[in-house]
Image (cartoon, rainbow, N blue to C red; front, side, top):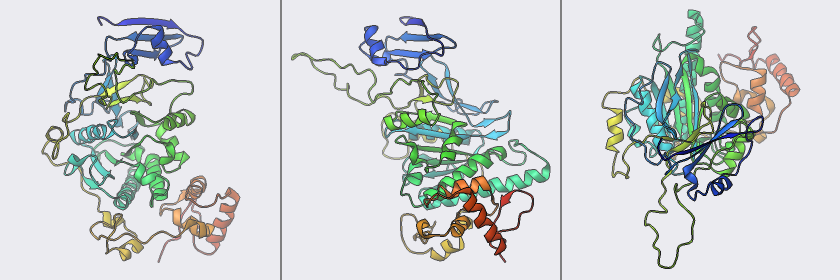
Length: 463
């Protein structure tokens, strides 16, 4: 590429563990830090490129062709600084697995536009989507009518997640009868995704449904992928505690597709400590304003009117891709300026055809108590009723047996998973021995089913 300076550096064994980007730019006499790209090479090499301007400043609009899933289960969401494609995997045809995905980004970083691209990609590729837009439907309003299910409150999101878990369980039982251990798209079921935008509202500390949401999402990530039911969440990049406080949930995301847009320092520290970013690896910061040069202006010099305009929306790192420390950017999704109504460019990408799949029957996944409580007026209400479900009992006052029954799904849990669920339900920590003793006592009283050789702890069948 003309006018690009490239330096190949020899590095110590194991590569560069830490570097000072500002010092590197000063050494190269480059005032605009965004023009300098550092990338760790293979073995004992690193490459430094100095561009005449940031190569990610001008990217083209996304096309429908980019968003149709290829034979390897990937869609093309954008480009790296060197022009190579940024691909996001929705399906792995080698293993037959749906994916687990997470998109993190601060306010204004381009998270909702990226979610729009994924939603368009799913519709264009025949993937059934059940969407929770927890910003009251404002994050991705054009998705209305373009996904099988669209909900906008936390309670509806819980019902949707229950429906997704139930579908995964139905498929597991059906495939076992068929003698099938993997998933094949369309034979007999379509690829399906649950997508939760603004997931931090559902999973943050103090959220009403936090514990159940974390458990359901974790269950989808563990059991859904092998039967073609995937899960993608999009959340503010503040702190990983926003993910339900579940170590298992965070570990699950390490094996999926994780994208990081402009972030906070707390998020970066957690990504490294939790292993989502290799220890010692460095990411070049993504500033709000790219190309801004800090310099003193003389009295007679005028500043450009647009020098403080935010222009880094869509810049990101694909942390679980093959180039986790290489900066990339999404293609432009939708109109550049805000629209007074639905964005016509995004609507054109979706197309006018009906979305694949059938809506989840939310009311079918309400508990008897929730049905009884339905009928008044609150934000987190049962669908179509206007009244919130009755609050769950205070975990702090519940016995171990009550807590076991509260977290135990109908299909049961292995002992290790039950212990993990109990120790993330907001109550006091419980030891394995105490759980086993309580389980034994509950079986003697008929509160839990007797073991049948599966190794699962299962609630007793109701009359």
